[in-house]
Length: 166
Length: 260
Image 1 (tube, rainbow over the protein chains, first blue to last red):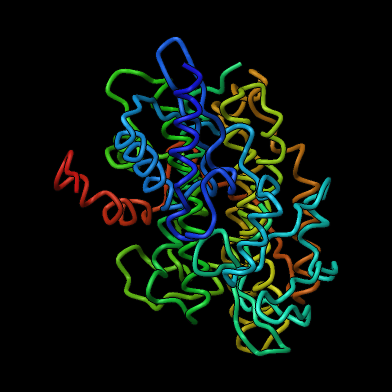
Image 2 (cartoon, rainbow over the protein chains, first blue to last red):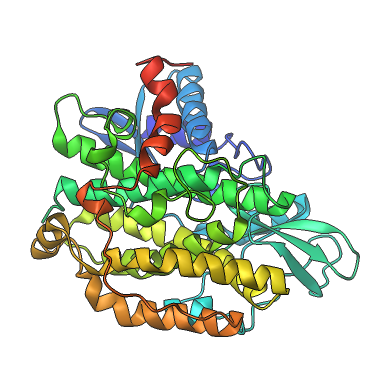
């Protein structure tokens, strides 16, 4: 039976994020677990942003790819612990950078709400994924998707997406 | 201990109603970046509402579903704050035609966002594990919402004479509605008693500080508030909620059970 679990992992390893096709669901931390239960194989996924429209697509992709591989499995969604960008491997972050998206910093620990909101608080610089310069500026807190912010590099003048720490 | 369903619906209705209001800017944002920003905020809010409605529906059992709760309850059954159903412009009757005012939208998102970062943070420790899980997710999103709104409050307030005047007018109009935050409903009292929620009055000082901080930087003046306490969370709403639900629920009610 454990070979079925291995086979499921291998099958799902092919699946990438619908909007960021260079990283796999496992690398992003969306695919949490494949395990054997009394009722058969169970695949555990966790949503990123609550309203991320890609989640439905991701669940469909998971089901379809398991079906194609002839693996009978249940897909369950788990909310806790909440997904965090800290689960992304360094390798996945490097892939994001190569793809042109600045990877997320580590999420700040123990930030009090009040401190977070203060505008005067110095922000950690985000390096431009194209030229590496940290001379960058936020254009908008919200970019092309809920998980990204829009930045501009003042050095090479290119706009780019920043994957927000979550 | 499980949070009472009425309390979950209060949280869900807040999220869905503000999500609907913010979504009115979709395709009409003052600049492209803000169009995207508001659409993203709405997506988060509607996503949060779905998680809460799903949880409420599971606990209600029977034929309850997230769609039934969102689309097939009438205005007096909604438990959202009155603040969140008001139109994206100043005080006018419900059927008035008026331009959307971005300052009104931003100030509302700011006042509510400041509450929600504090509330979600507290609910992360809820005795109701399902609610705590939703809170942990929502807090991360609420932080970005507040960050976005506070940033614009400062730009407007400390901006041009026109943007300052509009931001102050929005604040004067909306601030009295925040009194509803601090007067608990029976559902909130029951949630607190069960250990699933916290008494919002214990968060008031922190909220005051958050708001004061940004208003000071924005050179805006916190209006004096006295007397009136809205009762949206008791199901007694302004005339505006009916119009909002008319638009939000129209499709689902015209074609019940439709899928595509």
